Image 1 (cartoon, one colour):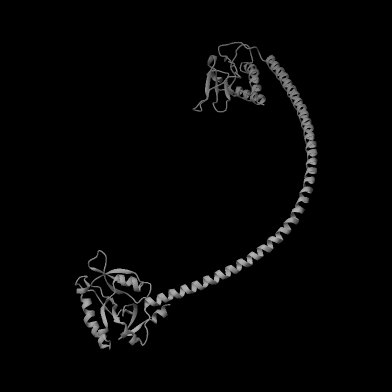
Image 2 (image 1 turned 120 degrees about the horizontal axis):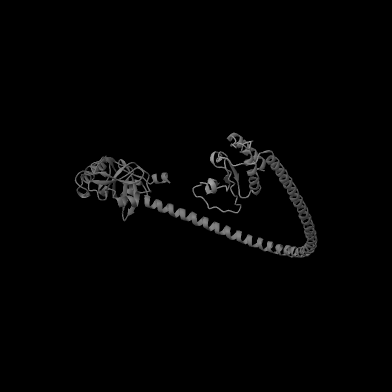
Amino acid sequence: MESNILNCKVPIGDFDWYPLKRIGDKYFMLSAKPAFKGYFSLGGTDWANAQLNKFLQQKFVAILANSGVYTDAITGISILTQGQYNLYVYNKLPSCGEYLLQTPAPNLDDRILAVQPNGSLRPLSTTTQTGIRPCFFVDANYLEELNEGPVVTIDEFYREQQEQAQAIENAQRQAEEAAILEAQQIEQARQLAEAQEAARIAAEKEAEERERVRIEKEKKRAQQEAEAVRIAEEERAKRMEEAKRMEEAKRAEEARLAEEARLAEEARQAEASRVIAETAQEPDEVDGPNTPKVIEAPIEQEQAYAENINDEPEVEYLEHGAKIETDSKSGFRNVYVYQDEFKDYAFIVSEEDTKLQASIEKMGVAIRAYTQSSTNEKRQPMRKSSVQAHIERLQNRWRG
């Protein structure tokens, strides 16, 4: 398209010009590129009084005349306004560098608008040297005589382009509509044939489907009957297995309880025999001034204790300085059964461990026998190491 636009150029004198539009009997012309460089001058933004306007009316006209141009056919020589640029040039003519417009920049008294190479506008100082691209009106007869034939304006060129594009678009649309109509007719014929074939196939499939459904119902009914029989058999087998398992569990539990009772009885009899034997070998306890007194702390199996928010053990004091410490987290109790120098020896008891509680009661008797002298004349406490070793043995023996 750009090469076609270049073909619209017309030579006048030493310069090439674009005929932008025919207005009446004249053509509005614009130089193909800036003819020279200049500026708007300091004479203000009034074009009629600008030095650039005077230059164009006098010296530039003389330049045209010297190049053989009949200047009487030329009128209104000036440079483009912003409105003329937007109407005739913007996005229509190829770029030719930067050049000046005669429209002042908005709200800037000392600035004038100039066209950039990319087509946008920017304000320049009125004293900035830039390209000057003259424009003027020329008599149509004179221009056509110079061109040796009709002149195609830029306005006509783009109108012709639009008409050609519209004609091509219309032809394409008509061709597409004809193709669509033909395709629709073919499609309708195909759909009719397919509908007829589909109806025939559907009738055959419907008959086949009815027969298949009948066979499937018969098969499903037989499967349901077989499944009902299988489920009934499985339920009966499960009930028999559960009864057998419960009977075996019952017999195992009875055997376990009987064994525990037997072992407990044997342990009780063995301990009773050992305690009796140890008591018979030791002298009877006789209170003396140096004999420590034994305090047996009662064990309250069902005693409840409050939650300790500080994680400190709860303390319950008994007679003669003895005490019970209960751990607030685990529920275990430290039961102190001695006073004086034996006060640090304790047994650890939980509320659930009834077997160990019973053992403590038994061990109290044996400990009293070991903490006195072997003669009846002078009873002295045993050494701490001996008592501690004895307590540890007792704990280990009765812990399980």
